[in-house]
Length: 175
Image (cartoon, rainbow, N blue to C red; front, side, top):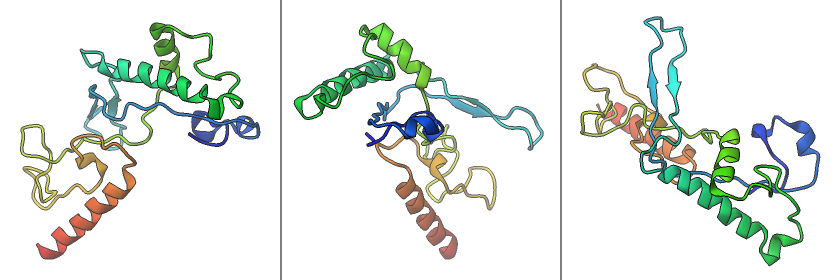
């Protein structure tokens, strides 16, 4: 929740000059998984990124998003905030069914800038790095960023990434 009107990652400057507050619903532990792959053999070509959002077969991510929106509406209409709550900008008060809410929320989806797991650490066949942060099968190469986190954490990834970097520094200095 922010004490200002905020949309499109702050790019809408006119919105920022108005009075209001903004709230965000996030699927912190998504079941859906995406992929990052090479577009070509040319290192200068951008990778192919498929977020594959809401692809989990059980529909848990969709359920979490809809329930999150419903819970947010309860919070905003509670006595402490009700006098400040007039109308939602998005999805909007007119959207009430699960399908309506979900369809409208999909229009504003984003990653919250915390994608992880593309070079996950672990011991399974999908693990890219080992416990020493070394890339499997490639000598003298480590990955030191949030991509080694096997799953998304329930908070900001900044501090854990700094911890990973500190650990990597120790590993490098002692090797």
